[in-house]
Image 1 (tube, rainbow, N blue to C red):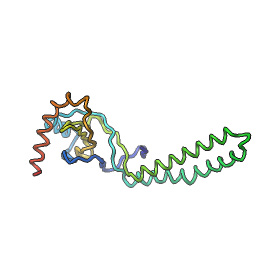
Image 2 (cartoon, rainbow, N blue to C red):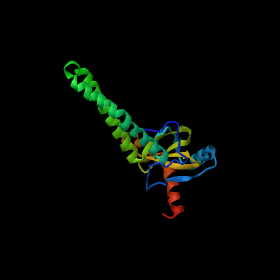
Image 3 (tube, helix red, strand yellow):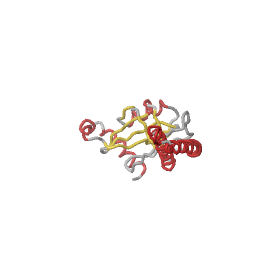
Image 4 (tube, rainbow, N blue to C red):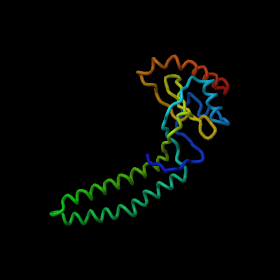
Length: 186
């Protein structure tokens, strides 16, 4: 996935969704408050995670500009070089092949950038000290403390080879999430 380097949107919005657990566990004044909350309410360990998030308008425009520049400036020059080499094919077969590969790579890059902009999703590297995984109901729920709030960042099935080891640790989490359901009246 392409990213706009050295840029972080004002608000992070993850694409993770679940009907089993809340999108947010609340807002907190500090990282320490979030860590205390997680340790008191869930059996969850801090973890490193790269989650997918929604791109903001700045990122979309930046990537569009990048692929527009590639399409308008780079690709025409490469195509022109390709046609020259085809005319000289008898003595330059290897040069023709190289130029053709550059055209293909450029078109692939343009297509990849356009697809990513249309999906409007990119990934974000999360701070392991502010990211937790909690096991509940056969799934791993990854939460991250970001923008002053603990947010659901990713949902993943528990692999069969891990299931037996994790069953006991998911009991505390089940109690917590069931209490949440009662509190919000589900």
